[in-house]
Length: 211
Image (cartoon, rainbow, N blue to C red):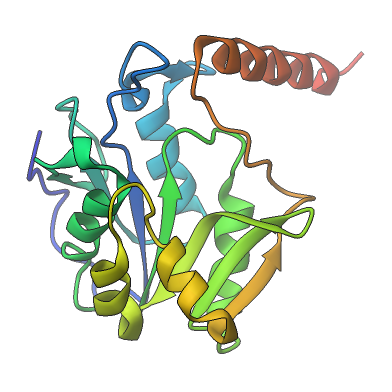
């Protein structure tokens, strides 16, 4: 439910997670947060990935669909239809003061797992204030942003751009974190995308079975 909390803010939190899940999924035909993938809603999968990757506190930004999410704080973005920028601003505003940085993830990338999140956090521990997962050298998601940059990221986030304007404005800050070997940024925009990724997941599961 909008504004739902998941208990007290944990002491000693350094990395928070932010899952952007507000869209209506217009091309897919249903809000992506509600889609089931491998028997799990994408929104629950996204929260689990952030937690397992090292984020002890997770914020989920919702909009088109009111979703009850376990283990996370939910924030309703009434301006979700304006694009990702408004959701990013809403989410950053809900990150607890104890968090030194936030890992921003998208709800529609089911092959981005905890290992990618963990790599970004390790980069922050080595001194990075901005870290971006890369695949084949291209910047994708997730993205880590240190608290000192929250205000500027929020100010520059307009329309559907999200954190991109900030990253473009400050290339000197960006640490690329290769994640090709542990994740895949393929996203779900259409029913065909969903079918293809489900088929890939099923094939991988079959290949992993003994015998």
